Amino acid sequence: MQPLSDPGTLERPLFFDGQQLYAEDLQGLEAHHRALRWLHNRSLHQPGVGNGLAVSGRRGEREVRIQPGYALDAAGRELLLGEPLTEPVPPVAGEPDGSPAYFDLTLCYPSDDDLEETETRDGVCAPRGAVRLRERPVLCWARLRPDTSGALRPVDDAQRLALEEGRVIALARAGILDCRLSADLSATLRRTARPTERPRIVCGTGPVDWKEWHAVAGDDDSALLGLRAEVSTGARGFRATPCYTARVDGRRPLVFPGEKDEPDVVLLDGPAYVQDATPGQFQCHVPLLVYAGALAGLPDELIPNARRQWQVTWYAIEE
Image 1 (cartoon, rainbow, N blue to C red):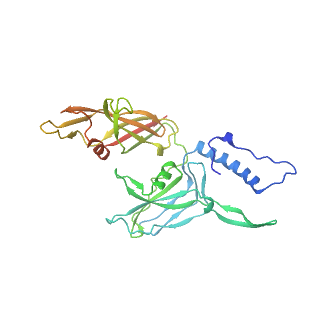
Image 2: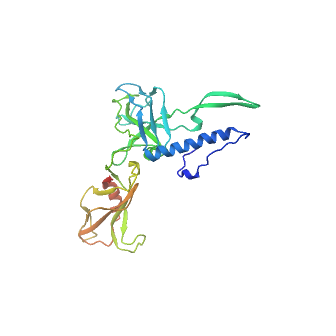
């Protein structure tokens, strides 16, 4: 049963003397309390490690060791590891250029198909069935590669989204060379399930998808003011809309050759500012000014060049 966003939709099971009970009645009672517990967890905590789950691995080793511990995912589900585990490192030689291949060791809540049946019983006039399941979390290595900004991101889009949304918890990062750890494991990427003390200050930087910014949205004939981009901050887990500040980093000025005997066009960008801010994103607007030459519209090369050379650096303060 998935956790419900509205506890008012829950139905509390009741029983009466003489009622004939079925397995689904008792399972419904357990699901009711589990849904309320998950709602409590995600209302008061954030996805991350609650305690334990220490991961160790030294340079040159072929396996890593995970200690018992407890974590929560974005749905409020408990990831409880009750005994130490040993996990082999991915059997890869490295990247084609000879550098280490990087992986994140992640932990996620198991699906029903992944649960181990630890006890079964014969039914009365019914086939044998499971009466106990072991909810051991699932360990998985996520392959990483650098994006356009040089930051390491999961190659698989589904894994990247699950990590950003907190459905999967990252425990450690490993570099692999010749099927061995190229360095000691790094745990700097771990997040705690305990909410941080406010005010909270967070920063970020990265490439964005620049688009034309017109005076009237959606009107191609309106005045062209500059560039705009949507910046996602959902992975930072803000509970309320923070106070964002943004700037644009990249090559300046933007110079485009003029046609025939006309002078080159030089574009200067004005101060970036934030609009339409929410806890998970904001719009970054950048005005463009013509310093020299004549300009009827944006050069065709501007948008591709801006997407390639300009990135947004921002910081946010959550009260």
